[in-house]
Length: 398
Image 1: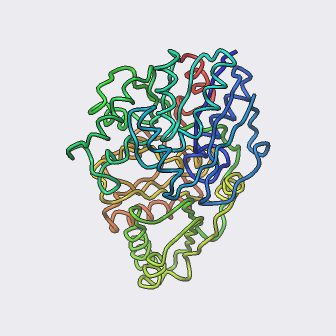
Image 2: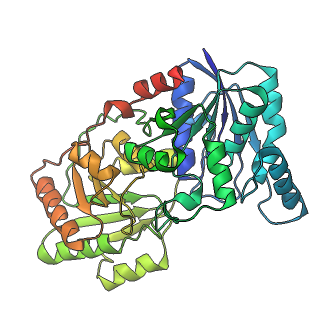
Image 3: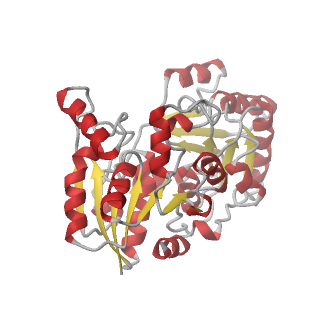
């Protein structure tokens, strides 16, 4: 049995997208009975949606420590940031959590032999680096997105061409010390390696599909589509909604419904009114993750909308594995060059449109609607490396 210390500020409570990815992995590893897991997490004072109990997610841990810190600038957080500079050689926004968690992390590490330390989310890398440097621990780091955040591509960050600050250079140097570096897509691996230069230390382990519902689409009179998750800048729904409006103009008898589950903005409401979509676009308040999956599984199509300003879609949206798990056909509205486009080209997801083109979105909606009318909607095809058995095997190999 592998004994691992998981340091994942975004894991439990499950209040945001990153926590979903991590809690699914923790569930799979614990259910396999191949891992003994101690978890260090963070209690967030904000959340995108309600959380369930640890038991409701089916996670069995050896121990759980949830560390809470004050995110306001005050004497204590300033002192913790100064300690971060002394302990880890760097201080940046949020680093004080690593300082607050250090004592319990060191205590756990000294109390038992771990096969490896698994870090997820910033600033957990500081603790992985600390344990490796001080005790020689084997460190497996996870980069679900570019790190540090300034390295995110535009419009999320400054991209690869921006001159790195001393802090950025220090963080990148820390990242390079990880023995194994996990990322969810080949495009993100290539992006990360362009500045990390760690070669085959970087391995691709996609977000997991824990299971696939065995269900048939129940064709009704109305094509029901859903977008689940935060839909705000820079993921702008304007082009999709304009494409939906154009589709309805061309197909006046078509019966369609587009529901948005999660937080929205006044901007979205303005687009809905401008395009006369108030009769077919509905907002569903945020809900606990497991319940949201049950809701998504009742729809004909699950929509994923990426930021139109992205030149290349390097990200692996967590919703891909969620929607595959729900057995709900995916309509990806994404950059032509990107991870979702790759999945479409490989027939893993059935429907795709250029996020920059309302016309292309309308054309793909026509294809979807004709398939719906014929009761012949295409299904997702889950890649083998997305499946639970493959991912558990990967983590056993580290």
